[in-house]
Amino acid sequence: MERSVEELLNFGVVIIDKPKGPTSHQVSAWVRDILHIKKTGHAGTLDPKVTGVLPVALGRATKLINLLHLVPKEYVGVMRLHKDFDENKLRKVMKEFEGEIYQVPPLRSAVARRLRKRKIYSLEILDILERNVLFRAKVESGTYIRTLCNDIGEAMCIGAHMEDLRRTATGHFREENAHTLQDLLDAYIFWKEDGEEKYIRKVIRPAEDIVSFLPRIIVKDSAVDALAHGAPLYKPGVLEMDEVNKRDYVALYTSAGELISVSVAVLENDIIAKPFRVVIDSGRHSSS
Image 1: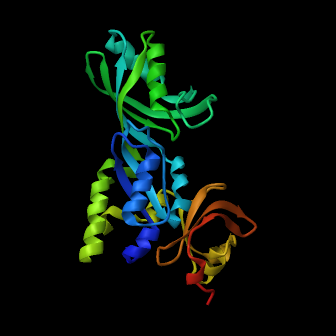
Image 2: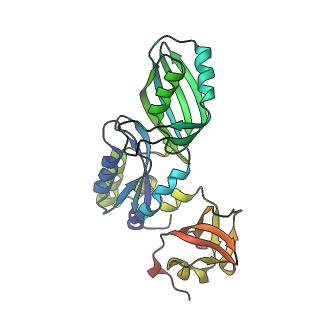
């Protein structure tokens, strides 16, 4: 948080409350244009009609944004069944969808239509009004809620479709952390025209927040320069370390809390981890 606003614009993340209408790509482009920066990237594409949590990475942080595919997503939606139904049967059927399921992405999806395995962590009915069912779902990244609703309708033998959907969380980023595009624009204008940083610092979070769910390794200052140039992390360079398993993604930090890289745990022959995404500016550190 000691970074300047300019540094946050080059290595930060904004949690946008995506409105209904535009694509996720369009929202990411609007963030880029509002902040007058060269590069943005979003995590977890939402259909144009779907609203809610859309993390958008700024500048160098775009190297990290795809790591959010590792975290669960949460949704609140409305499923409309096509005929009258027995509530107890619906609850039983929806309970059977918890756990591992197989899905084929919908026709309009941007990915290949092949059978995929996904995990449904929880599926809860919140309210029922006639044929409309308000539900909450916590699912593995890449799960299609529209397809889930269709499959539940088939299992009920009466058909169903997704009427409305809102993403309420992407991992540790929740809707209470989200800001509208207008919030972002206002914060940028207050900073640019009046020098007021309070609002833009509230909207733009340090890029380290993207990977805060990963195990942490704090490294010695003497090792930072080599790591910044893509070297593996060796045991003598470790200052502190969370519990880590082989092949885990881990986040490497300087003693000041600045993210160096996301690496993959090796834990063999004195090698602790090998780099996956190096994000620190190598010109800012020296081995001295």
